[in-house]
Image 1 (cartoon, rainbow over the protein chains, first blue to last red):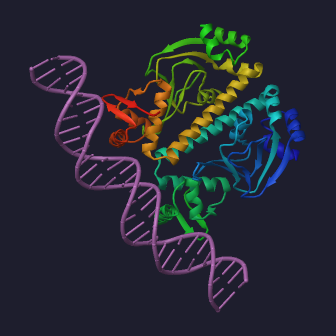
Image 2: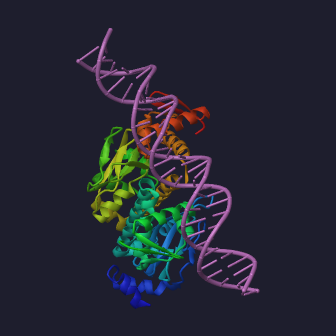
Amino acid sequence: MIEELIQSYGHLFERELLEEINQVGTFKEIPEGYKLIEIGEYIRSMPLLISGAIKVIREDSEGDELLLYFLERGDTCAMTLSCCIGQTKSEIRAVAELDTKLVMIPIQKMEEWTGKYRSWRNFVFESYHSRLMEMLEAIDSIAFMNMDERLLKYLGDKVKVTQDKMVHTTHQEIAYELHTSRVVISRLLKNLEKLGKIKLHRNNIEVFNL
Amino acid sequence: MIEELIQSYGHLFERELLEEINQVGTFKEIPEGYKLIEIGEYIRSMPLLISGAIKVIREDSEGDELLLYFLERGDTCAMTLSCCIGQTKSEIRAVAELDTKLVMIPIQKMEEWTGKYRSWRNFVFESYHSRLMEMLEAIDSIAFMNMDERLLKYLGDKVKVTQDKMVHTTHQEIAYELHTSRVVISRLLKNLEKLGKIKLHRNNIEVFNL
DNA sequence: TGGAGGCTGTAACAATTGTTACATGCTTAT
DNA sequence: ATAAGCATGTAACAATTGTTACAGCCTCCA
């Protein structure tokens, strides 16, 4: 396990901390689509991503969804941190977007390391910073952009995260993640196709000019 | 100054830290409407709120605004923290909503205290947590609520923050903060008045049933 | 005291997004 | 091979939000 840890976190953490992580962390391989965290659950450990990607989703009381952002290699879930510390329930759902490798750290260690390792503190702060910025981006999207722009951004993000110009989803799934209806997505996708920005296939969308 | 610090932060910080804050912090009184931070500025100190309230606003490249949340007594601006650490420009604007008292802390101290005081660490984490939650709330509002619900929530929040059932603003200002147009706000306010939830006056809105 | 400018009300219309309904074609299981 | 179910395309319409235009008031200042 240690080599993969070093690959993703070697430049961030000192040897000693890496070894502690190696000792207390649990290595996990998660298949695409696996639900890591559900809304309302209590959380007792935090993930350090080694590879793959995780999508973080917000849901309101009526079951309406909204995709917030993706976590990738080198990321951790600040929302999880937050919940751990506050001993509160999760406000979000986390689902593997790709097959994903990660290390789970028990939360007690997190507290301990924050006092002990400067590099860990910086990592945690950096992580909070990133997440706040992603939340701002999410807010920008829904507040300032029209649905067609949001859709294009969504497709671009997918391409970036999956490293694949073929976005493998249905219109319905996109509708859920952007919190709109399937018909709207079909309509706008058709427009984007007419504009030459994408090409539609069954279960697949081919994205150009990312 | 020390009594006011103790009143707001005595239950959080140990004596020693409070005295450090007292030594290195700069006490400031800010009038309503004063702009504390502008988008794009670099930030070299973080505020600890003693009294009053600060509104935090997002703006896109075209100058469209959106109110994100309020900071109150006992809060600090995690966004500022974030920017300090990352040495990045501010992504938000901060404006005093009321006459406000606060203590400004130089950022070097912040880093130092994070290693030194457990209570400070907890405070910082707690603060990040709160801000993430407020961002989620903002996202919920714009993603899941209609404008009339958002407007009602907006008025409720104002009443809570100012402790005054008379909300002193113009329709245009509300429109800016909710990122819509004045006409829309006037229309919806009129509806709310018909429903008996508010009463309209010039430059003032009286809010019932908060 | 008269005029300028800000605040509010309202109508009429446009644009965007959401909803319902239905048709078509593909995939899969029996 | 056929039925069932999913994915997509599209039309027609509804609801919400945004825009333009203008009128009436109030306030404040010259």
